[in-house]
Length: 517
Ligand code: BES
Ligand code: MN
Ligand code: ZN
Image 1 (cartoon, protein in one colour):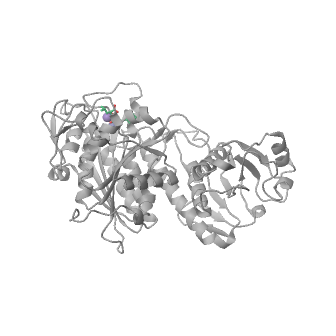
Image 2 (cartoon, rainbow, N blue to C red):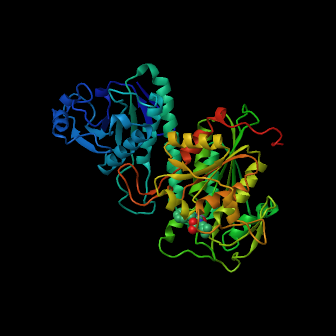
Image 3 (cartoon, rainbow, N blue to C red):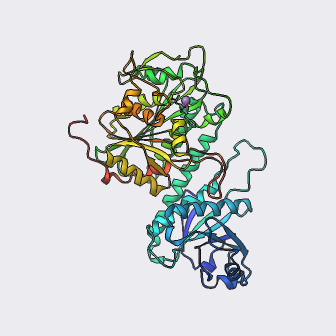
């Protein structure tokens, strides 16, 4: 039996493994395993599997792949033993990455049909369910469907996959597994769309084009869409966004998306806010030339929010969700803001601009305010916000800030399960001293010490009394060098986390009485 997801490449199969027609059957093996993992497989591979296990050629080391043809009986053309590492430390993220590693390797070999066999270690507990495993594998395989090199006229790194199969033996739970594969496929597709937006160069993806693309993605997914142009933005008095936009010839936009299921309760309302800087030169506080091309992905937070909304709508999240993505270039034009200038945001707060390169927090200030205007009770913003966060955590984790603690803990837990690793950083009151201004309410830079924390503290000023979290994805939005399980380039970080968060409203902290109109 094979259950195909209507919208995507991925499907569940509960057929006997020998009957699966595919180019590559992927079978996880754990370190220390000495026997062929599946009955009949070794015979179909003419003994190659037991030989490779005995010699140590296939030893189960993380993400190592051993390929061999299947020469008789089985319908799959070849098998890959895929190193799943030590059984004791096996988790959902290892599995997701293993599926990606297999998909990327298959693509290099020009194999377009892959079937990944769900398999647990023989001994010891595993901290996830079969449907969670099926979803993670679908998510991981979908990463192999992404085409980087958008503007290459030849050699695009092998043809994209045509058939991605999650193979399970448990026919009794086929319904739950098929739903999980579909969920993983929708999330994986949404991640790939986010990567695409990030990979687009800034001469193509201007704020207006970003807004048009977001509107098309959102409408296709059944969301309601509103795009604020420069007049509407001025009417809202979003002076922080307008201030950043002044240096550019391209006008700013605010992308507003809504997921409003008719049966959803009035509260909670999840509010997602994403940084949409389509290029960050630094403005008058201009950045050094070296590596500046990377700043085309300074809208990665906005892309994550838009693509999470797509998944939220397609998967039918049971609560209301609003998304706000302010988008502009940060350029040093003749009308650009200058250090010492004072801006007034839509909330009425005044900001002294110390450094025009601290532009993300400015546009997010107006974005956070607007999400509350639209009724958000629980806020999450996502931004490639600070180099300081990259210094603190490197590329291994996003920085997580938030209040109250139980909201932050929920976002952390959700991110961990979703495969977007993040690590909590503090919001001490002392950091406010660093952003106190002599002329205005606050200033937009707290200098070098604790730069990620003072940036978060700035955002907190605009979160009112709502539950609020901030994810600093400056280090995680872009993979500088490829790994077996991670392609070089945009990563689509935070898409899955934000989408999954819309499905755990039963765990949101209570809305303080009287705080919401
Ligand atoms: N977009 C950058 C942050 C960034 C840096 C993202 C490296 C990805 C990689 C942000 O707008 C920025 O320039 N931040 C400044 C803030 C400073 C001027 C207070 C920074 O981190 O240097
Ligand atoms: Mn900047
Ligand atoms: Zn920036």
